[in-house]
Amino acid sequence: MKLSALEYLYEKNYKQDFIYSPETKLGVAESNTNLKVIDPSDIEIEKEKKDKKSPQLQIIEESISKIASDVSETAETLNSIKNRIIEHKLRMEKIKNLDKL
Image 1 (spheres, rainbow, N blue to C red):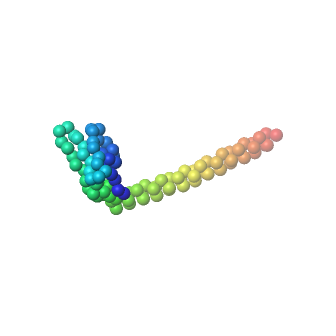
Image 2 (image 1 turned 135 degrees about the vertical axis):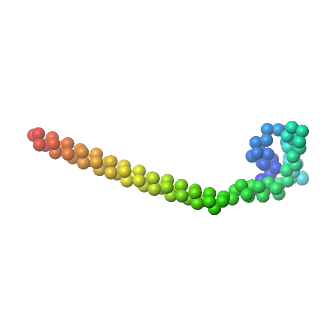
Image 3 (image 1 turned 180 degrees about the vertical axis):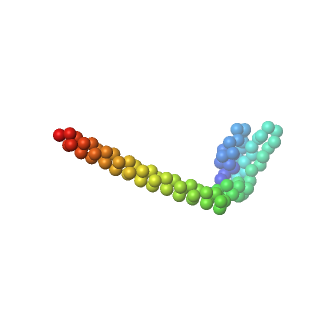
């Protein structure tokens, strides 16, 4: 994903003044007394690195997704069991009430 120097400065939360030149496609940000010149080709590389996930992170995210799915299924099963128990209790109460008659 291409990122302009202006967007780069915005993403990096620079609070200083900055200048962006569409002609040269360079951005200059003032940080105290230092000036930083930002080349968009550097930004693209940095952005690509940031976007790529490590294989370990992908495995962790997949595992978390699987666990969340399993938890959801378990919750549905427990809810179904709870509803059956409630239905059973209601039937038992009806039987008790019939016995009293």
